[in-house]
Structure formats: C-alpha cells, structure tokens
Length: 120
Length: 107
Image (cartoon, rainbow over all chains, first blue to last red; front, top):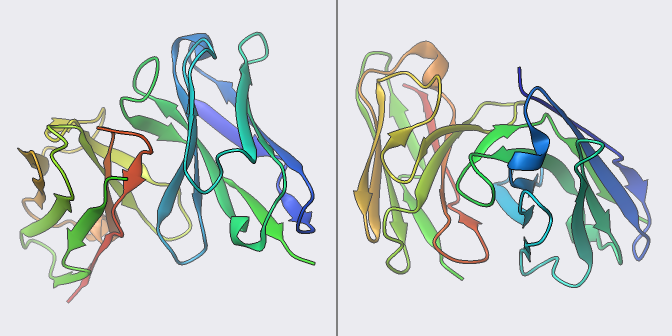
C-alpha cells in the first residue's frame, strides 16, 4: 500500500536551516507530483510547495517563497523540503502528500507528518 | 491569491442526519476544488477532487457539487466516524489555497 513517512523535524533557532525528508513506498514515485503542506496545531492547513513528477516544475506558497526549496530524488523515492531562514511562524506540523497525477491535481495520500518548532 | 470561505464554521448534527457544507471562492475556479476530512491527531484525507469526483475508497454518502465560485459537500447520512473537520482547497491558480474549515460535531 502507499506509504509516506516524513522525518527531519525538530527544534531549531530562528534564522537557522532544516531539511525535511519524505520516504515514499508502495507506488511508482517518479510518476507523481508531490506536495508539502503544513498545519499549526489547532489551526487550518497551509499549502507549502509542490514538485512535478520529474522535478522540472516547482511552485511555492507566498509565505515560504525564496526561503524554502522543494526537491526530489526519484532514484531514492524521497521528497525533500529545504527550509532556510526559519521564522517562529514556520512552527507547524509538516505533511508530505502524493498527488493524484504528475503535478497538482489533488493531494491524494498523506503522511503522518513531522513537527518543526522554531524557537530561541 | 484565491481566498476560500467556508460556512458554517461549526455544524452540530446527530448521526443519521444530512450535512451540507459550503465553500465559496473569491473568483471563478471552474471545477478545480477538492474536499478533505481531518480527524484529531490524523492527517487529512482526500474525499472529493475536481468538485464532484469521489476519491478512491470514499463512501457514496459523500458527494460534492458546484462550479465557478459556489461549492457544496453533502454527507447524506452522518455516520459516527464522520464527525471531523472538513476543508476545501482550490487548484485553479498558484498558490494553492485551503478554506478555514468546517467542524462537524455531535449535537
């Protein structure tokens, strides 16, 4: 079955960097777009970024544009989110999600998330 | 950015009742709307994509409708496991955006 497992979260100081990973299994990873979505505890969902199946197209939410970078390694079935210049307001649970198709047609399957806390 | 508004914020119903959730977009998004369900401590689950297409494994009691700026998610007869928060999300334009959510709780 499709499985997505996020890792790399933790506590980091403002201004520092962190890289999240999402290990995928149970499907042909290289054929699907992948997303990152975040959620502050008790609040709503915020889309962060998407990458196309082949890594050639990437789009970002306004609040992370220029600071975060999404990438993927199709040989390792792994999605990444490089987060630089972290801010307190980036504190959230970060989910990766598999798309229905090759880019952004629908976030069909989600991982359980990894928690990022930005605090001094 | 396309803003999505959901109504009501909270819907209090009993099992077996019909639930009607609304989502409005700040501009025409065609049929590019999805609905998600999220229970406490869990990741969201895709229910409906492109306004009216049920995702794999989603029961028939969930149905989506609408186009343009007005959309509806209907749960025909609430089961105990349906009490949760529901979000709409648009893919018409970047950035992708979510609505603030509707909580369906037990009356």
